[in-house]
Image (cartoon, rainbow over all chains, first blue to last red):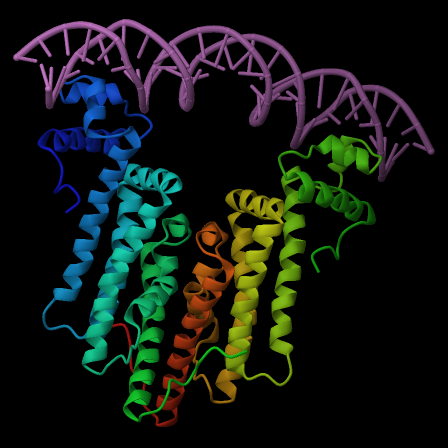
Length: 213
Length: 213
DNA sequence: TGGCTGATTATTATATAAACTGTTCAATCG
DNA sequence: CGATTGAACAGTTTATATAATAATCAGCCA
């Protein structure tokens, strides 16, 4: 949890700021408003956070931490095959991204603003998701349905292939169901790719298609 | 060719405008500058184009027409298998997008501005590319390497899967070679998916993975 | 002394005025 | 009379002044 090492006062500040960020957005909430909500002075805020942007960073860290936790629940779901988990993962990720974009626009806007000034936060987040994905892949490799030799690398490739459905920049172009159908199409193809590799692997042959131009 | 039905004077206007768009960008070139370049009055421009934005639209139509023509050359390349053509298509598309973004920034900026006000232009362009892709798929289906029953739909799915590598919004996050490697990874997986389907098809069985949750 | 304050400062945002630019159209030209 | 012009208009952008805000820090309090 990102708030683990936080002072009690810091949590109070983060809470007050989060509420305002969600309702009014990042730029429209002022440090003195946050200070008022916490019954303290503006100067004191800086004893707990180096800057306003750092409060925002913690805010999205919490949001994204929850997101990753939700995605991780897919891994732990009982009675589902690795293939099903892979599909669940991407459909859930798409759903989260789509809904957050549409009914928490301020949170989305804040994320964008933060990422443009702190790009490494986005990378951390992507790699956290990648680790969840890699777990699913490892599971599939273990039970023979996937044949993945480098799970983290393959996770990155899958994240690339699903990018269209997790990048809010293009969500306005299509409605939910149409996009979900297309995402299922991509997953179908990817899973068939894994099936092919698993079958090849069983016969002791190398993968069929390798990049040679 | 998009300029086919154009008056000679209209072509002159388009030429003058294009030069300025490329050097200074859309917003920084004025109608009177374009008119001056053509030795005519501003009012006369409106006899050939309804508005400044329409000149810009024609400008990117030409650009994108060239792009699609380049991609189409992949289809006509002799001595390449459908699988190779599929890879060529995406690597070339990525290369074009990446290079245009980095060494013709004004053209990219103009495209973005236009698309935000004329979204249908982007859709036309995507579907033109999709038709090229569908040709490759049909070819692969014909020679038994792909087993694609609905080529246009599958083309759309492949465009989705390759979106990460054609969307300039994220190009700054990684250098060319790293992205190209990842793209090859996606293509490898897709091609293996096709191999699986082709093999299944030969045995008279339905595709393995279908979206059922 | 460690935690806190709030006036102060440098920066950023907002509001307003001035200049510019896309578009139109009555008048002109060939 | 059709093609062209350029002044006029409305809308937008830019420049400037004004206000608001993030961040600081010398002093205060418990």
